[in-house]
Amino acid sequence: MSIFGKLSFKDQAFKLRENAILDAATTVLGSKGYDLMTMDDVAGAVGISKPSLYKHFKSKEELVGETMLRLIDGAIDQLAQLEDIASPRGKLEAMLEWALRVRLEGGLPFLPSTSAHVREMLMRNVKYVMRVLKLNGQLEKLVKEAQKNGELDAALPSDVVLYSYYARTCDPAVDYLQKFSKMNNEEIVKHMLHVAFNGFTK
Image (cartoon, rainbow, N blue to C red; front, side, top):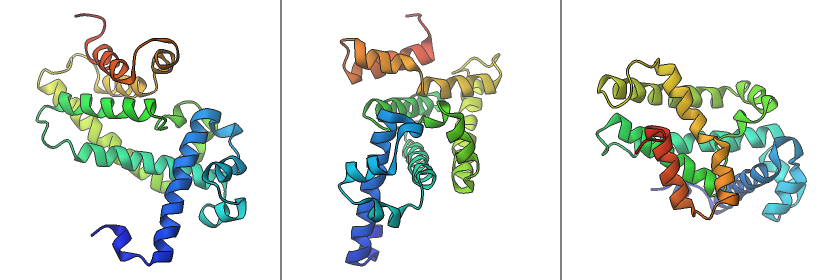
């Protein structure tokens, strides 16, 4: 049974509107960034009044925190669905592919990389920090397993591999390719994965 099956109709409507708000916040953040985004922007994108928006989120900081938390939870859920992939490197490739698709389709898992203010704000969000540490621990384990298996270069410090991996999720090349190349999203993902794991060799 889904979570909605346990809620009253009123509560279901409230939850659905909350999800719509988070979707809108993701879109507005992607186009305007944190500093320029306003609660009016989000309310307008959802089609509700600002007082209605404040019934769900008391501030812009709280709204952005929940938006980022949902994205991290999405990554954790995605990783849990990769049990059928035996190879640690295969799991890492699948996760990067997922992240690139989220980004190309307007998702926003990379906001902290572009704003010091947002990083500081999120570091005060205990729930967010705990989720990030959980995801980081899972990915770090995959990196070390892949190095041990000879799937990734064991001579590199695992931190170098892990943080370079994170950097690929927010590589500005993705934006340039989407805006200025003639490639579709599938082609961009394919080539970015190749560069991430094989460099510029065949």
